[in-house]
Image 1 (cartoon, helix red, strand yellow):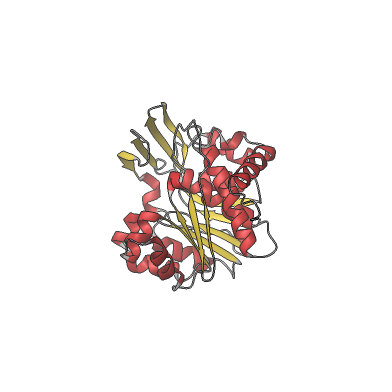
Image 2 (cartoon, rainbow, N blue to C red):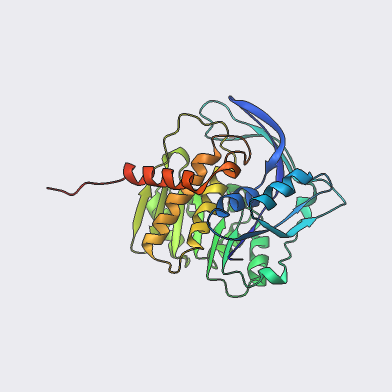
Length: 304
């Protein structure tokens, strides 16, 4: 196995202007692992409760996701999030969050996972992210994700995580909040000073920026006419990006950019349906088709 993803496995109840689902498969580890599975062998570490349906297990296994690290806690129910989107669907509005067994989640990395070369730390408490890193033996690359809640409630621990990873994946608002600035380039520069090789700043429907110490790359989102549910887009992007990188022999700037291309494509498919319904039905030719399209969008002809 090349890639380990640690994060939440959940069931979601979601309403958007284009429909609704009840207790559909969700969670950061779920979305990310489905996306990464198109590029590399992926395993997840998470926890579910006694109500987690067999069909969800079967779906992940069919996708090729290794579930040896998925804990089943019979004492309670699975993490459940309920929310809805309105208008342009740029932001989810939470109705209810039931942490259930996820509240006491303690990531235990199976021995077979401890030498995994690529690691994605999904959006969980930063103290748990540090705990995961203590269990992994000399990974080649670590990508971490976070959210404004942890930046506000545990900024010092978030910084400790940032100092230990190779890629910081964060959205524009979170980057500005953490660095206390209104400038994205300044925020990226501050984050790079902590030691990461690259900083990825997600901008939702406005695309993504990739910052290195001596490099910069910007990629637009794919213009879609059909967006049903934005839930999981960021996790699908991160999973697709590091999944692609896990299949590369070298960590070059070109490969980072190709990773972003593929991550953006997986995110674009994710939002076209609820849960993982779209991303589990893809073929590699579907991904390649949109990668080619996105490259053409950004092609600059030779100057005369």
